[in-house]
Length: 233
Length: 163
Ligand SMILES: [Fe+2]
Image (cartoon, rainbow over all chains, first blue to last red):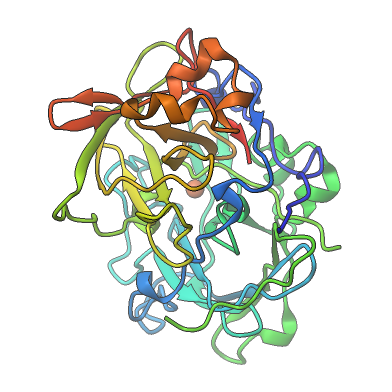
């Protein structure tokens, strides 16, 4: 029997976070009910190659997209520091001007025909991943007067089970908008919040081509049974 | 012990990165449809749903059985599912996660089948749910298919689980 320890308080935002106004009518009001350890939610699934798309590591059309080229890379592990191997990583983000390639984005900033805005890769056997992208622009949103989202990249991760599923956002070290952002600030624990901020990584910059940022991610994992890495396929 | 990465909202533009092909109907599949609603009873037009289930024998499918779908402009969705089996004392069920703008972390619920009321009496997860709220976890018959609405908030708020 595997077991997952409860998520430490303060790690995840409370869905009821009034400073982020869209939560008002969407955050459940009643307490969530704890599941038993043998529930299906702790038994899988592991999500890998079946959902992969070719070319998913390069969002820039071979470096033709406008803006500052960046390598986004990191390692995905579980709480026991085991690599999350051969697991699907999906990202999406605004372009250098702060505009998404999405019909719902009405921000008056230019689209870039060479920037796809989305990527999809598998981690390697060590849990590592990398994307070639563009530093996203900040963009305005309607949450409050003169509200701007800090530069960010949306991430979707799976890990060993339903219980380890995580959707999050990567931010950039030194962004002055971070303390003003109610979504970033919704993470109660300041140390946990800081884990969403990717540091600049000089060691992985590509001379003459691209800067680099490192975003390591830790997902939930079982406490007492080794997680067997999923084979390809 | 490595420290967990926090959750953040999926936001309104997830279609760009998270669109998967629809799982087609197959022999023996049924349609599970419904709507996602907010605390004011309004449709949620920008929710993403993920559905996973056991196989016909009630066992977990380590690398299969997962579906993902964005709701339409009216908050509606329609999956093709094959009913899973019962496993031990656990009644057949589907597990469902809802992601949306305005949810800083996904919420987790379960869908049980209306014809299994005898099994529901011994299901150890349903027994943790106050009796008055269990009906929010039951799909309803809808023609040849099933219907399951998700109320994120309000008087009919769906039961959500701490996974
Ligand atoms: Fe965003």
